[in-house]
Length: 108
Image (cartoon, rainbow, N blue to C red; front, side, top):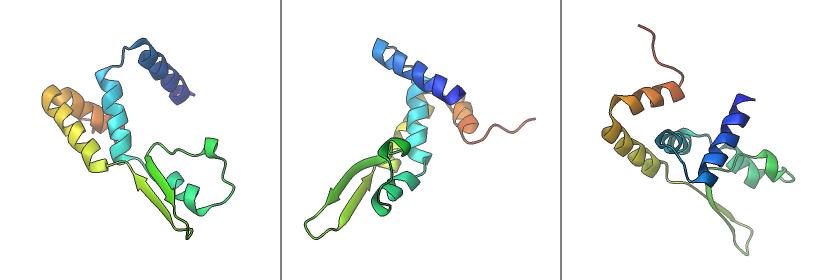
């Protein structure tokens, strides 16, 4: 429920032109560390409803005349590089944010 609310809030900020730095960092982290399971499912399983798949990592799908399917995903290394640049610019604040995305910070 909370994730759905945050997605709606993000869409509102995008439409209003008020995208925040943390929104960009979160999206880059999702691209860099996200799972490609649904992208593979799209190609291997017939009849899978598209609206139920998370295809955010999908960049391109091609099928040639012989039936071979080629799937391209987003460039994770590039997403990591951009995330690293943001971390350098913003220091420890972004570092804490990324640790929280990865499962929380260690408690002292």
